[in-house]
Each structure stands twice: as structure tokens, then as C-alpha cells.
Length: 136
Image (cartoon, rainbow, N blue to C red; front, side, top):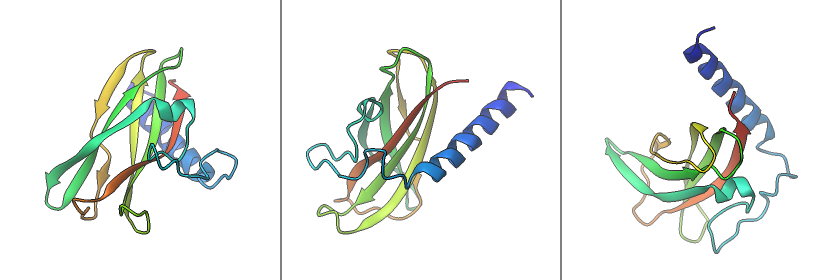
């Protein structure tokens, strides 16, 4: 397989694995930390900062995310973000970002995670699960 095919296959496997583990109650994501807007306080989640919402036009918005790899190995990230009402009673939409090949101590900004529903201007962006794995 060439590098592009390998990357696509690895991403699909990672997304599938994420879907199978997202409901696991042992991941430390049960309680929302209201002060950080983060569903978990793992080292992986600390690598991710939500920078804001970008209006892409046509009712589509993307999330601007900064990722800094604090591990000792080149890593890939699967990052879940939701848009919610200020009081948390309504979830408007969720999206997932895939950020790959980040070297140790390297940072990148990503805007590939898009919401397909209209997000109100007063919505709060909440960082959900973050999965970091060693790059292939």
C-alpha cells in the first residue's frame, strides 16, 4: 500500500475504534469540568485548546483547535467537540477532528472539524473526548 492508502486505512480504523470506545464509562469522561469546559482532564485533553468557531459560510462552521503534543512520540489525535447552550441543556451539534503526525513538543492549528448544523452565536464549545495514539 502507498502512504496515502495507509493513512486513510489507519484513520478509518482509529475512527472505528473511537466509536466502539466512546461509551466506555471507565475513560474518565463521565463528569464535565465546568471551569475548563472539558469532559476530562487527561494528559491527552491538556494537549488540545479550542480557539473558537470559524464561519465557513452556507450555514457551516468549523472549530479552530490548537494541538500541542506533550508526549515523547510522534502522535495522532482524535478530538471530539460539541456546541452546546450556555446552560448545557441543549446540544446543537458535535464534530470530530483528526490531527495526525504531530512531533513531540510540536503545535498545529486545525480547522477541519465542521459542524453541519447552524450554531447559535452564544453557543459554548465543549471539548469532549481526546484520544492520542502513536503515529504509524
